[in-house]
Amino acid sequence: MTRLHHLLAAPLACLLLVFFGVPLVLVVTVSFFDFDQFDIIPTFVLTNYLELFGSSLTYSLYANTVKYAVIVWTLTLVIGFTVSYFLVFHVRPFLLQLALFLVCTVPFWTSNVIRMISWIPFLGRNGIFNQSLIALGIVDQPLEFLLFSDFAVVIAYVHLFSLFMIVPIFNSMARIDPAVIEAAVDAGAGRFRVIREIVVPLSKTGIAMGSIFVVALVMGDFFVVKIMSGGQSASVVLAMSNEIAVLQYPPAAASAVVLLLVVTAMVVGILRIVDVRRELAG
Amino acid sequence: MHRPGSGRRPWTFYALAAFFGLYVLFLYGPMSAIFILSFQGPTGGLTFPMNGVSLHWFGALFGQQRTGDFAGSFTRSILLAVIVLSITVAASVMAGLAFRRRFLGSTLVFYMAIFSLIIPGLLLGLGVGLMFQFLGIKPAWYSSALGAQLTWTLPFGLLIMFAVFSRFNPFYEEAARDLGAGYGQTLWNVVLPILLPGIIAVALFGFTLSYDEFPRTLIPIGSRNTLPLEIWAMTTNVTSPALYALGTLTTAVSFVVIAVALTSIALIQRRRTRRGTRTDAGD
Image 1 (cartoon, chains in turn green, orange):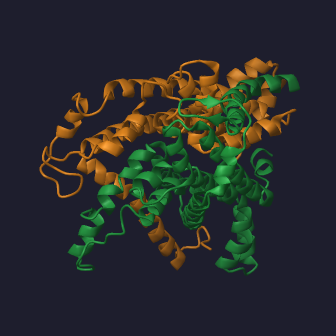
Image 2: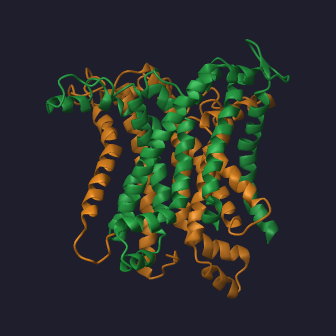
Image 3: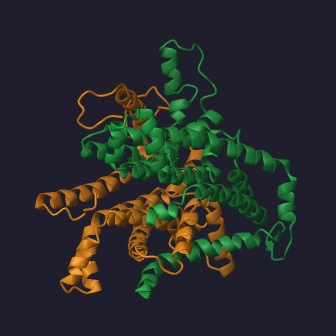
């Protein structure tokens, strides 16, 4: 039987090995290579890393990217938990619950770039939001900070990535046995105590999965920062993509390796708290 | 806490419903704005007000000066998405079956899938690009870009299969075996039909994630772009509603695919309920 299981898992395992494992090893290898104007030179140097850690730009890029990750994680967690809680515990019948859940997930199956640029006519100087504010007499001058700012970057991130929080949390919450909650209510627990002592602990797999997604997606982003900040802000990967654009692969690879270690540390931290594998496949 | 059947709704229901409503508005509001704006008149700009209503910008997409190769990139994207869908469905269903039991290396494959999912897309693309460069193979949409996209769709396929199997009742399988069916027969006649809605969900993810993918595809695409890469190029140099028209078209395609997938899942479930055979039992 085990042999059969190996055969069944082989196509997926091999594809991941070839297109994820090998490329990863190559990135690590190239990060120790040297380069000149035209080509990469296979040798072993530490200059890429020394330059990376010697530059104050690296630290400010990480500070900026982590700042986005923390803000977006907090916002998506609040949204993900609240929306899932509403859908699972307040919406009946089941078909309506499913329909509203699908309303939340449909944008996930459409283009991220299009969803991102859809904020441009909305937040711009003469955009819908400013026009509405002026029409309502709330402000006299259009607000300038809405577009091409940190604000716009965070809005776009939350818009694109909150689904990654909603879906796993919803999935965890939907599996909570209603009898457990009934019992707690009968025993006199108020709704906030039920949330704190039953819903949150039993949703922790979903919260962990969602957090991994959101943190990794924000840490790895370059296109939202590039477009929505209007070139006024940057992220680790955006800086990396600029190096790739001028074919400086070794320093880009070194930067990639460091980023990967940072993201892995964050994910391992989350997995330490919650054993996702056991709860998913077990 | 709202108790089902307790009659009056608590105040939290209304607060949460309002929150949910605002979230949906946040999700769809800006998108609907660009759909409307893509019907701008020929003199219209990137924001409201509308200067007339026309199909001018959709026409402009097919004119040569607007985008490099709209029709070609669209065709490639659809083809690539179909290939990705097929491989993702086959590999994920097989792996899903394998993962019902622990096997030597299962933890390794699981973590490889998780890290393949969360690795920054551009970084993965860089790695695949380097691999093809070292092998001396020219990158192309049907080879290097295909591989890069699979690192994104396969882990999703696997996670969906986990969810599907966690609701799968093995009694049907055991019953089939007790009645004398072999492994292949049980799989083909019992397990796969029961799993069909889940398999359609994997297909939906495979298609749409490939059709819209761009961070992983950007570096290993080779010389001919897919549609999302055309759109990405446009975001930086096109400042007319043609961009919105392209957004509307590509989103319409996504909506059609989503509708087909969800409708077929719904039809299958309804047929099952009507026949009274709740074969997806477990919940």
